[in-house]
Image 1 (cartoon, rainbow, N blue to C red):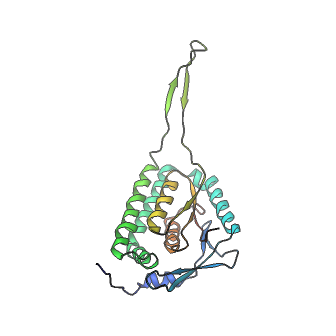
Image 2: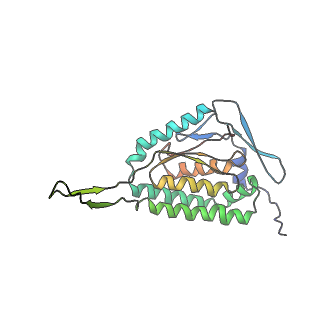
Length: 231
Protein backbone atom coordinates (compact mmCIF):
# COMPACT_ATOMS: atom_id res chain seq x y z
CA UNK A 1 0.00 0.00 0.00
CA UNK A 2 1.20 3.49 -0.86
CA UNK A 3 0.64 6.06 1.86
CA UNK A 4 1.20 9.74 1.16
CA UNK A 5 2.45 11.72 4.13
CA UNK A 6 0.31 14.83 4.75
CA UNK A 7 2.04 18.18 4.33
CA UNK A 8 1.18 21.61 5.60
CA UNK A 9 -0.94 23.75 3.33
CA UNK A 10 0.84 26.19 1.09
CA UNK A 11 0.45 29.88 1.84
CA UNK A 12 -1.68 30.34 -1.29
CA UNK A 13 -4.05 27.54 -0.34
CA UNK A 14 -4.28 28.69 3.28
CA UNK A 15 -5.29 32.16 2.08
CA UNK A 16 -7.82 30.70 -0.36
CA UNK A 17 -9.47 28.55 2.31
CA UNK A 18 -9.68 31.46 4.74
CA UNK A 19 -11.47 33.86 2.43
CA UNK A 20 -15.22 34.46 2.38
CA UNK A 21 -16.54 32.21 -0.38
CA UNK A 22 -19.37 33.39 -2.62
CA UNK A 23 -21.03 32.40 -5.87
CA UNK A 24 -19.68 33.87 -9.11
CA UNK A 25 -22.52 35.62 -10.93
CA UNK A 26 -22.11 38.09 -13.76
CA UNK A 27 -18.41 38.56 -13.14
CA UNK A 28 -18.84 39.35 -9.44
CA UNK A 29 -18.56 37.37 -6.21
CA UNK A 30 -22.13 37.72 -5.02
CA UNK A 31 -23.43 37.37 -1.47
CA UNK A 32 -26.22 34.77 -1.20
CA UNK A 33 -29.84 35.87 -1.01
CA UNK A 34 -30.45 33.36 1.79
CA UNK A 35 -28.62 32.39 4.95
CA UNK A 36 -27.99 28.71 4.19
CA UNK A 37 -24.43 27.40 4.23
CA UNK A 38 -22.53 24.25 3.28
CA UNK A 39 -19.59 22.93 5.26
CA UNK A 40 -16.79 21.54 3.12
CA UNK A 41 -15.00 18.64 4.83
CA UNK A 42 -11.58 17.10 4.54
CA UNK A 43 -12.60 13.45 3.97
CA UNK A 44 -9.39 12.23 5.61
CA UNK A 45 -10.17 13.88 8.95
CA UNK A 46 -13.83 14.97 8.69
CA UNK A 47 -12.82 18.46 9.79
CA UNK A 48 -14.40 21.54 8.22
CA UNK A 49 -11.94 23.25 5.87
CA UNK A 50 -14.28 25.91 4.48
CA UNK A 51 -17.88 27.10 4.51
CA UNK A 52 -19.66 28.15 1.33
CA UNK A 53 -23.12 29.67 0.77
CA UNK A 54 -26.06 27.47 -0.20
CA UNK A 55 -27.63 29.25 -3.16
CA UNK A 56 -31.36 29.87 -3.38
CA UNK A 57 -33.62 29.72 -6.43
CA UNK A 58 -33.27 33.49 -6.66
CA UNK A 59 -29.47 33.13 -6.90
CA UNK A 60 -29.80 30.52 -9.64
CA UNK A 61 -32.20 32.72 -11.61
CA UNK A 62 -29.77 35.59 -11.30
CA UNK A 63 -26.91 33.45 -12.60
CA UNK A 64 -28.98 32.26 -15.57
CA UNK A 65 -29.96 35.85 -16.36
CA UNK A 66 -26.31 36.93 -16.21
CA UNK A 67 -25.33 34.08 -18.55
CA UNK A 68 -28.14 35.00 -20.96
CA UNK A 69 -27.11 38.67 -20.97
CA UNK A 70 -23.52 37.71 -21.76
CA UNK A 71 -24.69 35.34 -24.51
CA UNK A 72 -26.78 38.02 -26.16
CA UNK A 73 -24.18 40.71 -25.55
CA UNK A 74 -20.37 40.71 -25.71
CA UNK A 75 -19.93 36.94 -26.02
CA UNK A 76 -22.06 36.71 -29.17
CA UNK A 77 -19.99 39.49 -30.75
CA UNK A 78 -16.65 37.85 -29.96
CA UNK A 79 -14.77 36.33 -32.87
CA UNK A 80 -13.99 32.63 -32.79
CA UNK A 81 -10.29 33.42 -32.60
CA UNK A 82 -10.98 35.63 -29.56
CA UNK A 83 -12.74 32.74 -27.81
CA UNK A 84 -9.71 30.61 -28.64
CA UNK A 85 -7.31 33.19 -27.19
CA UNK A 86 -9.28 33.51 -23.94
CA UNK A 87 -9.33 29.75 -23.55
CA UNK A 88 -5.60 29.44 -24.16
CA UNK A 89 -4.98 32.09 -21.50
CA UNK A 90 -7.18 30.11 -19.12
CA UNK A 91 -5.18 26.94 -19.85
CA UNK A 92 -1.93 28.79 -19.09
CA UNK A 93 -3.33 30.07 -15.79
CA UNK A 94 -4.46 26.59 -14.74
CA UNK A 95 -0.96 25.31 -15.56
CA UNK A 96 0.60 28.11 -13.49
CA UNK A 97 -1.60 27.20 -10.49
CA UNK A 98 -0.85 23.48 -10.83
CA UNK A 99 0.36 22.97 -7.28
CA UNK A 100 -2.40 25.00 -5.65
CA UNK A 101 -5.15 23.21 -7.58
CA UNK A 102 -3.64 19.79 -6.93
CA UNK A 103 -3.21 20.52 -3.24
CA UNK A 104 -6.80 21.76 -3.02
CA UNK A 105 -8.14 18.64 -4.71
CA UNK A 106 -6.08 16.36 -2.48
CA UNK A 107 -7.54 18.19 0.51
CA UNK A 108 -11.22 18.50 -0.39
CA UNK A 109 -11.63 15.29 -2.41
CA UNK A 110 -9.11 12.99 -0.74
CA UNK A 111 -7.10 11.79 -3.73
CA UNK A 112 -3.32 11.44 -3.76
CA UNK A 113 -1.46 14.63 -4.53
CA UNK A 114 0.35 13.18 -7.54
CA UNK A 115 -2.92 11.85 -8.96
CA UNK A 116 -4.41 15.32 -8.54
CA UNK A 117 -1.46 16.84 -10.40
CA UNK A 118 -1.61 14.43 -13.33
CA UNK A 119 -5.36 14.04 -13.75
CA UNK A 120 -7.10 17.03 -12.20
CA UNK A 121 -4.63 19.60 -13.52
CA UNK A 122 -2.48 18.31 -16.38
CA UNK A 123 -5.37 16.61 -18.18
CA UNK A 124 -7.52 19.69 -17.63
CA UNK A 125 -4.87 21.93 -19.21
CA UNK A 126 -4.59 19.62 -22.22
CA UNK A 127 -8.37 19.51 -22.60
CA UNK A 128 -8.83 23.28 -22.48
CA UNK A 129 -6.14 23.71 -25.13
CA UNK A 130 -7.73 21.01 -27.28
CA UNK A 131 -11.18 22.57 -27.08
CA UNK A 132 -9.72 26.05 -27.71
CA UNK A 133 -8.62 24.81 -31.12
CA UNK A 134 -12.20 23.82 -31.96
CA UNK A 135 -13.42 27.40 -31.52
CA UNK A 136 -12.06 28.28 -34.98
CA UNK A 137 -12.99 24.97 -36.63
CA UNK A 138 -16.74 24.69 -36.06
CA UNK A 139 -18.32 24.78 -39.49
CA UNK A 140 -21.53 23.83 -41.23
CA UNK A 141 -22.14 22.36 -44.68
CA UNK A 142 -23.16 23.67 -48.08
CA UNK A 143 -24.77 21.47 -50.69
CA UNK A 144 -26.84 21.61 -53.86
CA UNK A 145 -30.32 20.14 -53.80
CA UNK A 146 -32.13 19.02 -56.93
CA UNK A 147 -35.90 18.91 -56.80
CA UNK A 148 -37.44 17.87 -60.12
CA UNK A 149 -39.87 20.79 -60.09
CA UNK A 150 -39.80 23.50 -61.31
CA UNK A 151 -37.70 22.51 -64.27
CA UNK A 152 -34.40 24.36 -64.71
CA UNK A 153 -34.39 25.91 -61.23
CA UNK A 154 -31.37 25.23 -59.03
CA UNK A 155 -31.38 25.36 -55.25
CA UNK A 156 -28.57 25.82 -52.77
CA UNK A 157 -28.79 24.90 -49.07
CA UNK A 158 -26.49 25.30 -46.11
CA UNK A 159 -26.31 24.58 -42.40
CA UNK A 160 -24.86 26.95 -39.83
CA UNK A 161 -23.89 25.83 -36.35
CA UNK A 162 -24.91 28.29 -33.64
CA UNK A 163 -24.69 28.27 -29.82
CA UNK A 164 -27.57 26.44 -28.17
CA UNK A 165 -27.77 29.03 -25.38
CA UNK A 166 -27.06 28.95 -21.66
CA UNK A 167 -25.57 25.63 -20.53
CA UNK A 168 -26.15 24.13 -17.08
CA UNK A 169 -23.06 22.17 -16.02
CA UNK A 170 -23.53 19.85 -13.02
CA UNK A 171 -20.28 18.36 -11.74
CA UNK A 172 -19.83 15.20 -9.60
CA UNK A 173 -17.55 14.90 -6.60
CA UNK A 174 -14.94 12.37 -7.75
CA UNK A 175 -12.87 14.45 -10.21
CA UNK A 176 -14.29 17.90 -9.53
CA UNK A 177 -11.75 20.13 -11.28
CA UNK A 178 -11.27 18.03 -14.40
CA UNK A 179 -14.99 17.43 -14.82
CA UNK A 180 -15.75 21.12 -14.34
CA UNK A 181 -13.35 21.78 -17.21
CA UNK A 182 -15.12 19.08 -19.24
CA UNK A 183 -18.32 21.13 -18.85
CA UNK A 184 -16.89 24.61 -19.28
CA UNK A 185 -14.44 24.20 -22.17
CA UNK A 186 -16.84 22.80 -24.82
CA UNK A 187 -19.44 25.45 -23.92
CA UNK A 188 -16.90 28.23 -24.38
CA UNK A 189 -15.51 26.81 -27.61
CA UNK A 190 -18.96 26.65 -29.18
CA UNK A 191 -19.94 30.17 -28.11
CA UNK A 192 -22.30 29.21 -25.28
CA UNK A 193 -22.31 30.60 -21.75
CA UNK A 194 -22.56 28.40 -18.67
CA UNK A 195 -23.82 28.16 -15.11
CA UNK A 196 -21.61 25.66 -13.29
CA UNK A 197 -22.91 23.78 -10.24
CA UNK A 198 -20.19 21.74 -8.49
CA UNK A 199 -20.97 18.93 -6.07
CA UNK A 200 -21.68 20.21 -2.58
CA UNK A 201 -18.93 17.93 -1.22
CA UNK A 202 -16.24 19.45 -3.48
CA UNK A 203 -17.15 23.02 -4.49
CA UNK A 204 -13.84 24.77 -3.88
CA UNK A 205 -12.02 23.91 -7.08
CA UNK A 206 -14.93 25.32 -9.11
CA UNK A 207 -14.55 28.60 -7.26
CA UNK A 208 -10.83 28.62 -8.03
CA UNK A 209 -11.60 27.86 -11.69
CA UNK A 210 -14.02 30.80 -11.70
CA UNK A 211 -11.27 33.00 -10.32
CA UNK A 212 -8.98 31.97 -13.17
CA UNK A 213 -11.74 32.58 -15.74
CA UNK A 214 -11.99 36.15 -14.50
CA UNK A 215 -8.21 36.54 -14.52
CA UNK A 216 -8.11 35.30 -18.12
CA UNK A 217 -10.36 38.20 -19.10
CA UNK A 218 -13.56 36.49 -20.20
CA UNK A 219 -16.56 38.85 -20.41
CA UNK A 220 -18.65 39.01 -17.26
CA UNK A 221 -21.38 36.38 -17.10
CA UNK A 222 -19.84 33.95 -19.58
CA UNK A 223 -18.98 31.55 -16.73
CA UNK A 224 -21.01 31.57 -13.51
CA UNK A 225 -20.53 29.31 -10.49
CA UNK A 226 -23.41 28.50 -8.16
CA UNK A 227 -22.94 26.58 -4.90
CA UNK A 228 -25.94 24.64 -3.65
CA UNK A 229 -27.22 21.40 -2.19
CA UNK A 230 -29.64 19.17 -4.16
CA UNK A 231 -33.22 20.33 -4.19
